[in-house]
Every structure is written in C-alpha cells, then in structure tokens.
Amino acid sequence: MNKKLNELNEWIALKDHANEMKKIHMRDLFTQSDRASNFSLEVADLFLDYSKNRVTQETMNKLFQLADCVHLKDSIESMFKGERINKTENRAVLHTALRAPSTDTIIVDGENIVDDVHRVLNQMKSFSNKVRSGEWKGYSGKKIKNIINIGIGGSDLGPVMACEALKPYSDREIDLYFVSNVDGTHIAEVLRKVDFEETLFIVASKTFTTQETMTNADTARSWLVDRYDNKEAVANHFVAISTNEKAVGNFGIDTQNMFVFWDWVGGRYSLPSAIGLPLMISIGPERFFEMLDGYYQMDVHFRTAPLHSNMPVILGLLGIWYNNFFHTESHAILPYDQYMNRFAAYFQQADMESNGKYIDKSGEKVEWATGPIIWGEPGTNGQHAFYQLIHQGTRLIPCDFIGFCQSHNPLSDHHDKLMANYFAQTEALAFGKTYEELKSENIPESLIPHKVFEGNRPSNSLMAKKLTPSVLGQLIALYEHKIFVQGVIWDVFSFDQWGVELGKVLAGEILKELDNDASLDHDDSTNQLINLYRKNRL
Image (tube, rainbow, N blue to C red; front, side, top):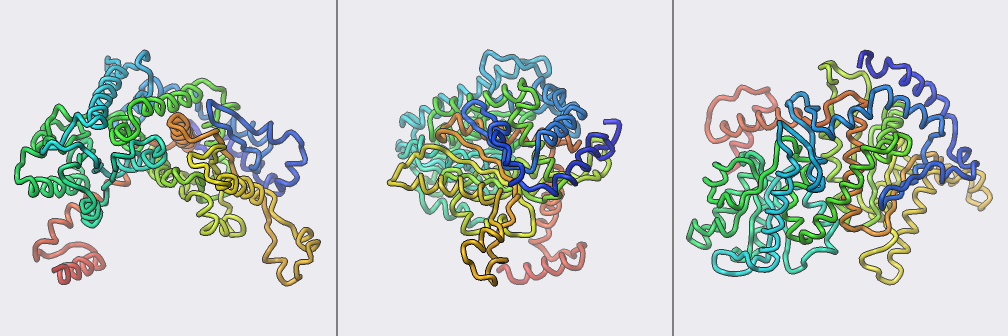
C-alpha cells in the first residue's frame, strides 16, 4: 500500500459518510419495505441477515470500494495459493488446506501438501476407530473410557469448543477432559475423576517443549507410572500431536502414535488438523469429515464469491465500519444454543491474537484502531448478565446473534422460548422504545427516562436449520475469513503472535530465581512480589 490506510480517498469518504450516518436511526432505514431482503445472504446452510446495521447501500458500496482499493481479492488468492503471507515468520498460511478434498492440489516447496494432510487424517481415522471400538486398550487390557487432552491455546480452545458444540454426535461412553492451565489444580481435579487403567492422554504440542503442556504431561506420566509401577505403560496410555519425534520418543510415547502437523498451520486455526483428534474420537471420523466439508464449503465461497455477495467479506467490512468509524471497542458473539457455550471464547484467541497488533506490515505504528475485544456468552444467560450494557450503556457494542431452527433436545416449548428471545433482542436493540411509546402506556413520568431504549444498536443475525458438524465447520470458517479480511484492510500481519512471547521469556527467567536466594534485578514492584512469594510459599 503506497498510502497509509487513513490517507486513502476511500477511507476519507467512509469517514465523511459515517458522520452523516450517525444522524440516522434504524427506524428510518426500515421504512423501506424490502430492506431485510436487500441486506440478507444465504451461503450453504447459513443465513445472514445484516439489515439491523447502521448502513445503507451507499455505505456498503463505499466499504466494497475500500476492499477493492487494498486489493482484498488478491490477498485472498495469495493465501489459498500458499504464498508466504506470514512475512515475519516466512511461512505460508494454509489452514484452508486442512479441509481440502484429497483431489485438490496445493503446492508448497514443491510438494502437494494435500497428500500429507490426508495421510494424517487417515492415520487419525484408523486410531479413532480403534479407540471407539475398544481395539485400543490400556496397559492392563481395559477399554479406554476417558480421553484427557493436554494442550494450551489453539491446542486446547478449538477441541474444547468443538467437542462441546458437537456433543449430540458424541460417543457417550467416552468421557473427554481438557487440561490446559499450568496451575496444578487443573490437572489434579481432572485426574481425580478418572481410572488410570481406562485413560488415554493426548499431548498436543508442536515442539513438545511448551512449558504449560509439558509440565502437565510430566505430571500425568508420573501419575500413571506410579499406579502401574511400570514405565512401559506410557506407550499404551499416551499419544502425541507434535513435530518433534525425538522428544516424543524420549517421553515414552511410541512414535508410531505421533500425529504431525505443519508450520503453515497456526495454532488458533488448527482444529481441522491432528489437533482435532479428541474430537474425531468423540464424534467419529464420518462426522469429523462432515465438519471438514462444512469448512470447505465456506472456503470455496470466500475464495470465489464477489465482494458484494461474500459473507465473510460483508461481516469483516461491517466490523471495520464500527471499529474505525464509530469507534467501538468490542464485539459480542451471542449464540443461542447451549452447546455453543465455548464459541465466543474460541474466537477470542482467533481474533485478538490475529489482529491485536499496533504495527503495520511496513513496521510502522498504525494510526487507526485494529482488533476489537471479542466476548460473549450463550443466550439466554447473557440476557441476565450483560445485555443491560448493550441496550442502555454508553458504549456502542455490535453483536452477532447465532440461532438454530431446531434443537437437539426438543423439550416442551423450551426452544420456542429460546428463539423468541433471540428474535426479540435484535428487534429491541435496533428499534428500542421511545418516550412517546412509554407515555402512551401510562408509565409514570419519573420512570420514563429510565425505561427509554434509544435503539439504533447494530446486530447481525446468523441462522441455520440445526447445529450439525457441517454447520459448525461453516461457522468457524466464516469467522476465520472475517478475521483475515480485517487484517488485510488494517494492513497488519494476522498470522504471527509475537506479543505472546515476551511474557514467556520473562517467566522462564523468573522461574530460575524462585528456587534460590539470588539477588533480583527487576523493577521494585516485581522484586517485592517475588520476595513475598519466596517468603510464604512453603
């Protein structure tokens, strides 16, 4: 980009346009009878209604012009073709290859990586079937009934979210647990729940050196070996997801039971890789491949659809609109399905680790806001927690509402009541309730100011018939590509995470200082806290 983003004519035009749009209420926008159909889109199994946004067709056209100006389409193609767009690490970005059909060809360094992807998927399939059927047994010959996944970040958040989301499709005879926190309490509480003879550990660490993961893995190994009084038992109860064959072997895991993944897969985008092994064991290979197909459907749409009818592009541009021209600071993801209770948490990492950057691609500090704060909880729980802030708070908070026409648990009228709330909330946010409406209801004058809802608060409504593996894949890919769109426009590298590293380095240095009385050379505050810890930890 020759000019800075905020110097582009298209950016300036959007800024001027936003000043005009801030004067217009959605009540006025909805005087057009066809607004809902004009601002809706259906892709695969997903229906998006984005009509309850503070936009007109002019707004959207200006946003599409901005996307054109920064050559968004070219960037999309560069990613799919495997160009090294992760410049700071000199890596391709090819999480899309993880869900490509075996007939596809994607060349990286002279090799068709799709062949490697499907080799690992087939290895996962074979192993999953062995565990599910009982062919794979623990050291004492008992069937595996517990799976404990040990990982952190992308090696934890994705499988946790997906296993919960697709629980209706799971083998209920296998219990899944996830350990991520280096706090010993996390693994201690999980180990209390399981029988060592019936437990399989999946250790997920690309390098097999991740401090939190390997600390927990070492504890799990000691726990198992102590009970069997035999180190050979490790091979029956541990498998690895890693690229470090030597370290895996030294740990005691048979390297035949090591599932690899690649440096062109970022952790937060790795669920469709071997990182998804606990999910495949839970729901079975067939359902797992259905999820991959859902991903792929959205990938094809994102790569081929024109900007004006491209669902991830539209969501990404709407985020730009609010973040940069209405100065919103956060974005709420609100799924109306209890099985989706970890979806927002999953995309906290995907979004904030990707676009939480203040340095642009040229190495200069940006002059515009980048990644929003992502948060949310399932409805209707959120309605009784933080919706007050969304409706009547001083901050404008764009929201995505996600709902399904059918429930996996159709008990009496539960689902109708859930969806009634889903529909009501977006209507209330958009249109509010006026002073005049309240006055006509004979509300006491003193209470009216407190009961006025300004409305004009934006939301997107995503709907599907039912939460299926395919639909989950579509939803995940939709948000992944939305994040990519915003990173391109903000001119940041979305696929590194250097901001995670400094704390790790400092923690490693401090750890060495906790076991001795060596003099400390930190700031006064850190020195004070370390000394307090030294004094009171025993």
